[in-house]
Amino acid sequence: MTDMVTSPSFMTMSSRWNVASAKAGLSHVLASARRSPQVIEKRGEPIAVVVGMEQYARLAEGERRRSRWRRFLELSAALRKEGGVDLAIPQRTERPSPFAGRRRRS
Image 1 (cartoon, rainbow, N blue to C red):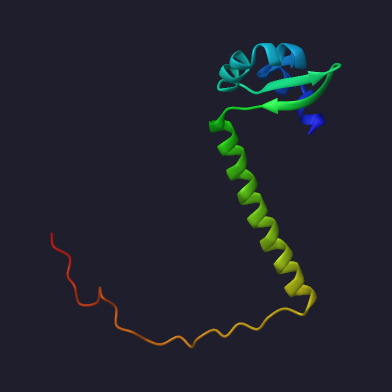
Image 2: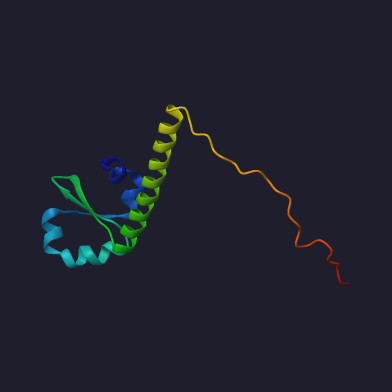
């Protein structure tokens, strides 16, 4: 996380606060977090990031999707390691076409 917080693109999008000024101006920190992430530092080191609920919801949804995908990949790897699984594919049967016998109108 520290790499992301100190990356140039993140730093241009966020404001930085020391702990004392963040405490004193908490309502301003919170209002600013609706627009962009607010980094709180202690002795010049980033220790926390305050983000608005909308951004948090997007981040949480992205993490939820990545977590589901990782779980799928883990289960797939476990199945391959065990030798795979045989799938029972039903025999195809002929069936009438719902479009057979219809003529096109001009």
